[in-house]
Length: 409
Image 1 (cartoon, one colour):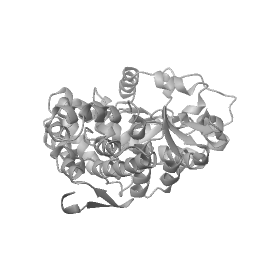
Image 2 (cartoon, helix red, strand yellow; image 1 turned 90 degrees about the vertical axis):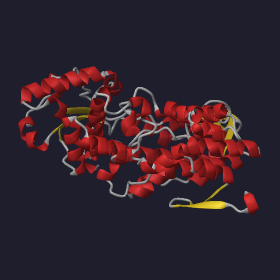
Image 3 (cartoon, helix red, strand yellow; image 1 turned 60 degrees about the vertical axis):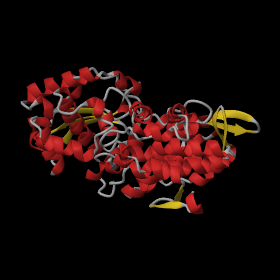
Image 4 (spheres, one colour; image 1 turned 90 degrees about the horizontal axis):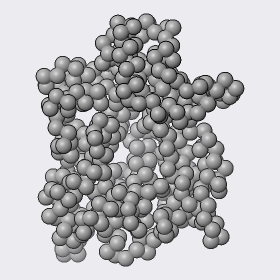
């Protein structure tokens, strides 16, 4: 640093985070400043009013944890600086409202981040110190250092659990990241020492409960579906340019929805502005089916066809009928390798808790049908299997333990 001075950002989760002069220059680039205007959790502030934190904060926090882990792994100074820069930039290509818009786009946000890093003025700055291709590889989990930022038990995941929990007020996401970091080694991926298993169990349990209470809350899913349908229409009509999504921020899309010539986008924005949200008229938990995974083989075109048939039978505009399947409960952390007396074992084999979570992952996700509140009374005898070819029901499975669990969220 010039004159030996450091700069600090006061973070709500970690306290002071130090920055060197080059990192300050990265953060001062307009491509990075845009992240101040991208909400980390998209539209979840409609459910949790405190969830207004941004991708900017998350990227800074991920850099902080990446630095701590890199130092714990005894990496060289050059490698530590590379990890810090990669972690700082890992979400720089996120579109408006983060993963909400990504559900409509033809490319994932990692590809947009690659474009920002390699094809915009950001590259000119980064090449003063780094090989931009190495940054892109790390962001995509490639190479020896990739798993630190993008892997099964990476610093990206650690930060968003802590940060999302902190800002929503949902206590499930509190994890012992210091214990995790101090028990990780880097070989062919990140390896967890047996002493860190309890902290890993805590992280997995946190994710398990954050899934229904925040990330896949039933209201989160319908507001996301509303937004995505409106975004798709505006992209299809050329009102919003998909190839420029890395340039837009949340307010750009909000203003476009409010004032463009697409009546549907206008109305959806009015409904989101005033929290006029469709209601669930049918919900079936996936663990009711013998093979829950089959639900994820139902194509979007089949869901859309079912929505259209429901709209015809019940006299509702087809664009206001929504069928949503909760995102697949992936929980990649379960694949983490654990070192026991020099031998490696999957975390699911070491921990009974993780093994149980692996089996219980389909207890909470469901398929739900939403319609405008004023139409809800029409659906008292609604049968979803009249419109979708659902997998076989497991009539022998006992569901009592989790029968009312979904109602908690």
